[in-house]
Length: 423
Ligand code: HAM
Image 1 (cartoon, rainbow, N blue to C red):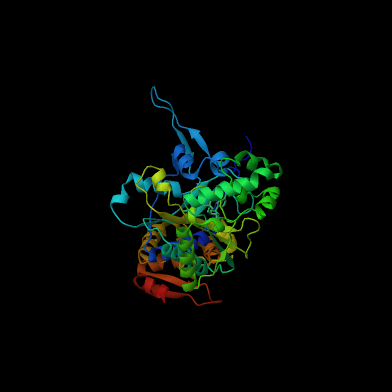
Image 2 (cartoon, protein in one colour):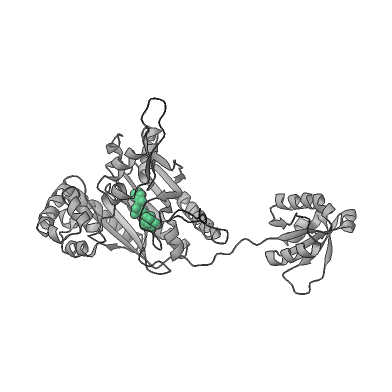
């Protein structure tokens, strides 16, 4: 067997890089909790049927991108079909129904962070295991909460220093609007079917909206002149969209209306949005975040009809759009033992300092003092503290400030060390 490697399209995140993830996740949690969202964690594996019914069978995700396997069967039983979650929305709805939250609170606001799996062709910003941070709201029909959600996202991106973004919004209407639009779109597409990609030809009758979302150049050419859904909105749908726009205007949240925005999932109704990055290191995968309303999903999955809206953002893509450097927490002190037999005392001292909240590193392998001090220098620690025979007897350490050239060594009482390091 050759060298062991990660699965194609799946990545390790090593120390050095992980600090940027922590920063992003911390800023995300902090921002969304201020808006009343609470965290939910659902399993990575779900019954395949959840995604087939929740996301829609004529989508790229369900048709070709899911990691699905048959679980081992119990005695005399058939193994269940399970899938690694390709997104978080369907799982959250499943949890919302399973734990009967519908009956318990009028509006539920959840957020989540975690890995998702799609068997896409890997490229920069597009992976087979990727991480999303997302929010879902159940029980509010909008449109004010829709505006608040989009504005919260823009605020989050600003917190991270990602400002060069484009916020696109559209409305997909609801019920009768969709049926009328679908019919008009089919009338337009059918005579042009020969010119479409084979995927679009195959899905044309089942799911004509997908053609608008296709990346194939021949589909995009046909889609460019297709009828616009905004021209088909019912009076209620149009009023919903107008109120969303007024609320965004009141918040001074910048946005553009894109009447051809469809997005790759079938569950959306009314408000739809996507945030694209223009700066940083993004390249072609510039969709940082996507979301929208899915007022029908809860009923479709067996619950009482409940309006819902949410979004998810791609963490790897956001990291590509963010400033490269994030400061790593600096070590306060590196403790070194003069002799191997001083190590137990060193352990006790290190623990005391760490309990006091300081960042402390040691080298406990029993190497020479010189070698330990070389590590201290390389570690970037602010101070080196040496514990030897005399210091043990006096209850002190010899402290050197590594941030100053030719700094004097200073004898400090162990009992005072935390205070001195903090200064
Ligand atoms: P989505 O547009 O499929 O929506 O994904 C949201 C974001 O996840 C994308 O904008 C992108 O940043 C990131 N993403 C998607 N696929 C990949 C990939 N293969 N590699 C790296 N990043 C990727 C959803 O997933 C919906 N669940 C969003 C939502 C929540 N709608 C309502 N609630």
